[in-house]
Each structure stands twice: as C-alpha cells, then as structure tokens.
Amino acid sequence: MSTALEFQAQERTASGTGVARALRRQGMVPGVIYGDNKEPQMVAVDYKLLNQECHTLAFYSQVITVSVGKEKQEVIAKEVQLHPVHDTPVHVDFQRVNKDSKIHVSVPVSYINEDKAPGIKRGGTLNIIIHSLEIVCPPHSIPENLVVDLTGVEMGTSIPLDTLKLPTGAKAAHPDRDHVLATIVAPSGAAEEAASTTAA
Image 1 (cartoon, rainbow, N blue to C red):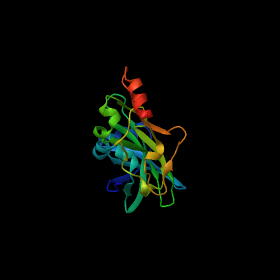
Image 2: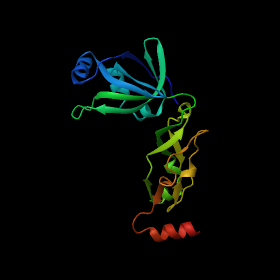
Image 3: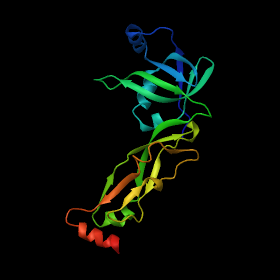
Image 4: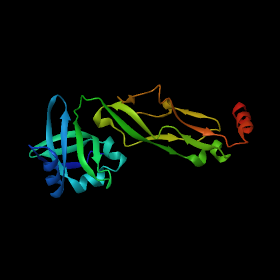
C-alpha cells in the first residue's frame, strides 16, 4: 500500500456554484473532508494532481495525506464528481481515517499465470466474475491489489473467495455474494472432455 500521495489543500469558508466556478478558474477543485466524529471541513485541492490521480483504481484504495495549513489529516477518497462532458473532477469527498478505523474499500483483483492453467491450455476461457473485491480492513492494511494464481487450475473449475490471501485484520465485505471469483469455462463442444478430465 502506498501512502505517498499528499494534497496541499486550502480551507474554504464559502460554498455554492459561483464559488466553485471561481476555484476552478484558479486551478483548484472544491472538496470536503468528513468523518472521525469531527465537523466536515470544506477545502480546495489542486486540479492537476486530482485529475491525474482520480482516474486510477489505486486512488480509492490508499491512504492520502491532506495538509490544510499546518494540520495534516489522513483520509481516503470516497467520491469524485466528474464533469459529464469533459470527465474532469469538479468535486471530491474525503473521509478521515485513524488507526482504529475499519473502512470499506474496493481493491482490484489480478489473475496471473493463465499460461500455467491446464484448463486454459486446452481451450477453456477464464470467466472473471470479481474484477475488484470490496473488503473491510484497517486503513493502513489496504492492499494495492489482490492476486489469484491460476497455476494448475483445470477446466470447469470455480475459483473460490478463500483462494485470496487477505491482509491481517481484513475480511471480505460480502462473502456470500462474492464467494466465486472466477471460473474456467469449457468451449462449446468441449463440455464432455472437460467433464471427463475433471472426473479423472
């Protein structure tokens, strides 16, 4: 997990469409920091940095430091509102975190070693069901991604959730819903061969 991302923010006291437009003309994006039993704080952050980072999956699964004056706060990005035409950020919501927090976060799932899966070698197709998994974990235990190793996986096999190794203190947020990560599906006409291979 990376914690290197830092925003230098300005505190703002006014809100509204006119104020937001004025901030954007100055190269800033309005936002709010909330949570941790503290009052919400209205801020503005650098447009270029936010636009660069908010289109990456990692942006939503890392702890970010937001500095407002001399105060530093650890947060995670909860939502970035994008312009409907230009797909650029127009507002950002940050949630404060601390060492005792348990947060919901969506983490990308990577599938590796397809070339070492017998089921795929014989013409099967990897059918990915879970591209990113929602987990509950302490903020400083958020993994950058979760990896599924397909080595040795046969045709017709379902890859269960417990295949994943989660960080200490982390658990799947919806284990019943997300209990199957992927399957290797037989090509049409090869179902009988897949069934006989599995039985063997």
